[in-house]
Length: 110
Image 1: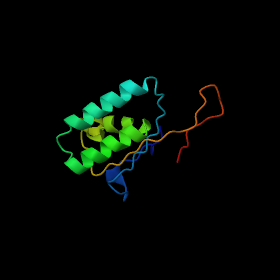
Image 2: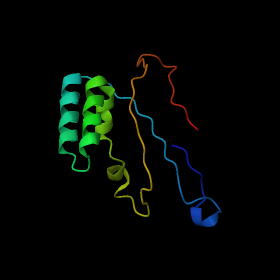
Image 3: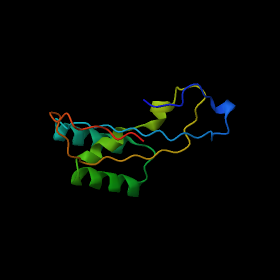
Image 4: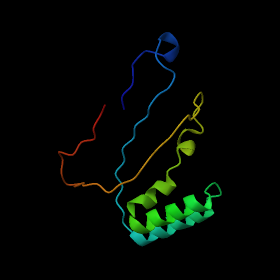
């Protein structure tokens, strides 16, 4: 975790907006279960219109890694944090090369 030690937003001319970057690697252990759960999530999503729903179903059918994106909820992540209002959020999921036995793999820190 990286932060600016000892400085508050009120003490500086820093912007009040913060970009939070999170990188996760998840292993799909049961592609069928993930796909079924993602399809159920899409069908139950009351905020999707018919076109968005169809696009989501197609994406789930084409690439199981896309299924995971339907379970990411930035509002739930920041919803109970005092003094924070979620302004904008984007996220995606994609297959990646990863070897859990390779000690040289490191997350990029900006």
